[in-house]
Image: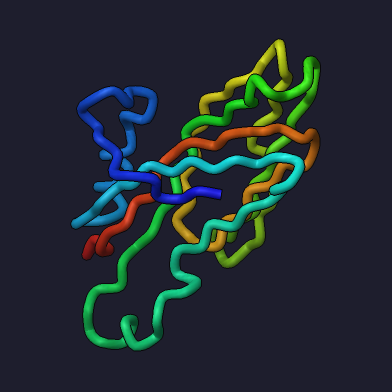
Length: 153
């Protein structure tokens, strides 16, 4: 499992996620966006994204702005290593409006037929769980982790 592999450069080479600077600026006034890549497979069927889990309490109370985190998932890719005809089903679980727990499928991939899917998902509240509910993958999820101060509206 990998989160935050490196800083994402928007003007060069990564055109399939060109909306990220716009989305990040709507979320945060001072922001940094990191590349995210995770793999779901037979061994790792679920991952949890929760950057605030180990945030020390004293850092939250010292008067400094609390950083806002957002997870953006832009692409799901079924690896070439998957068996021919394999179906991979990916599910996301997150907190929605009014603290509602939302669990929904986000992608169905079929090896040899439909092995890549563009997604445009943004999660503003941690934790977010991503699961491989069918198949053994590996499935790669690619996107960005935005970190910044909340905009004052």
